[in-house]
Image (cartoon, rainbow over all chains, first blue to last red; front, side, top):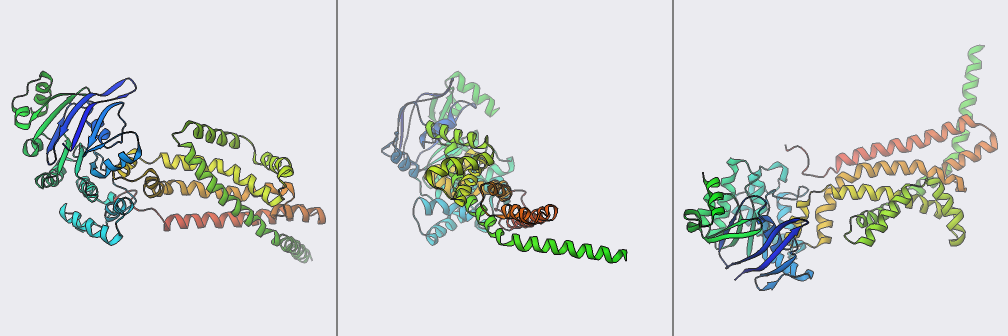
Length: 242
Length: 231
């Protein structure tokens, strides 16, 4: 198991964001998390890489237990790449600068090494010609592909995607999903929060349905999509699929 | 006849203005030195206090808030008196040092607020992206947040710099021989008030105007990339 969580809970004041969440992910698996907004999906991803601290429960990533001390959070973050809904590229750096910064600062790669790796990844996401552009010169879809390349440049073992296509215009969703499908085919372990049921159907091995901070139902993709058991899953899917 | 009197009067006035200028000129470097040293110190202090204002730790946060509130709430002139006559007697500060400390401490409070606001203006997602890439909080601040804040911070900081140049004239009150003090000395020797303060004012004006021109030029030249309207 590359990711294991036991009974993790998290509240924001009165609001319960996560309420005893348990799940496991195997290396190489692609798992999609679906659920209505406010169900705790994004909070769950943020807890996994320590951007949010859980109130209770246990998270173990690739054998490293995530706890209060900073070194474990650091080690875990080295294993996890994260892609955000709003891309969060660094606007003051060029595309190449975005990809190189953490490689040099965290992985301690030399500038030529970092650039070489960056250029290979930009080629992979089809943006080699944009290496000297700045983020505000790119479309949303291009920015998100750069963000994926930036995360991959750190050689993560797992990629977390937090609604990666929700902020995109419809015509740009496809290009981002294509990159993600390629990654999945290469065997990357991926945990994806998304409303793109088509993507889930095509690449996800499993689907987790969350509501009100709890995992309501999980199972093989075709089982969840074709014959959901829980009434809440049925209600949600009927709205999303209609 | 009449024309000749006018010409005489003008040449006499010019003669006085020239004398004032010759008397004042040696004091200009002190005004510049005082402002530069004090403002450099204010920037360092302001950055530290500004970061302290954003600290998660209660004590640091409270202390820095008190520092800013107290120093912003007391006139600079009173702070100069307090530091020179109050602390100066105990710590044996000379006029220059007392003036530097007073301006630096006072302006650090204003700069701290500007720097704090500049850092807070950066979107939360920038921290999350940097941290998720494994960067430390220090690296995040140094390579991701501060370079972006700089663009927001620089114009108001430049304004404060110009203000501090003008406020350095207050240090004349404790007898440091900078521009304004030299003006007072000239006046008390020759009793020409209008011409003296006219020249003093014009010298300040030349310095502040050329500074604001310089700032505008630098802002244009070192505009941080990647903001604004896409081209």
